[in-house]
Length: 341
Image (cartoon, rainbow, N blue to C red):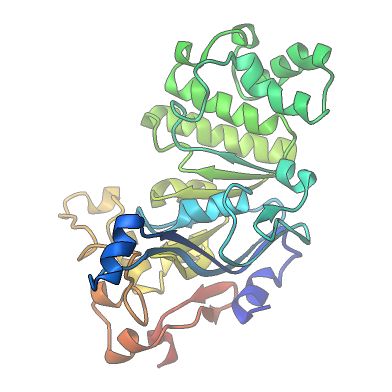
C-alpha cells in the first residue's frame, strides 16, 4: 500500500480503497486511418488519460468531497467506484473485497452496496417507465422483495426521500427537476446501499432546490448510516456537506485535507487558486478572475506536475518530475515540490 494511502486510512479501517487507479480511453484508428498510417501519414491512436494513478481511502460514514474543474476525471473515477467503468490499472476494494477483476464486477453484493446518483435527472430516468417501475425494478429483479410487495415498498422509499407516494404511477416528465432528482435518489436507495456516489447530483437544480437536496442527503446519512463520495466542481457546496475534500487536477489527486483546514489554509497552488475565486460576502467588491490558463488536454498531458504550465510558482523541476502525494501535516496530503523546501 502506498504511503499516501496508509496516511489516509490510518484513522479507521476504510470502507472503500483506491490504489493507483487509472483509466485510459483509446480511440483506435479506423480502416482509412490505418491505410494512411501505412502510407506514411503522421496518424496514431489517441489515448485519453482520464484518471492517472489515484489513491485514496474513505472511512465508513464519511462524506468525501471530490472537487476539480470539468475534465479532471472525477466523474470517471466515480463510475469506476460504482462498478460502471472498469479501471485500466490499479485496484478498487469495497469493504475489503475487490470491486473489479479482469474487467468485470466481482460480486452482486458489492454492486448493490455501491450505488450512483447522476447529475442530470432529465437524462438518467427512462421517460417510458412509471416511477413505480423505475424505483421498484431493481429490488424486484434481485429478489429483495416479492412482486406483490413492490407497490408498498416503492411507496415507503418515496416517502423517505420526500415524494408523494400517490404519484408513483406517474412518468418522469410529470415531475419537476428537484422531484426527478429525488426519484433518482429513491432508485439508488431501493436496493439498500451502504455507499452512494453522487456525481454533481445537485448541479442541474435551482439554488433553492439544491439546499433541500443537500439536507436530504445529510438526513439519509444519519438515518441509514450511509457513506458518500460527493463529486462536485462547486467548492461552496462541498464545504457544507463534506468531512474531507480531495482536489483533483487532470486525472491526479493534488491535495487531501479535512474540509475546515483546506478552506483555512490550502497548500497546493491549484487549491489556492480555486479557493481564491470562491465568492464571499466579505470580498464582494473584489474583481474575480478564473484560474490562469486553460486545463491541458488529457490526450497530451504536461510532463512532471500537470499543473506547472498554469502555476505561478513553477520551477524547472516541476516540468521534469512528478511530485509525490505525501503527508504535510496530520491528516493532510499534498503533491507539490514546494513542500520539499
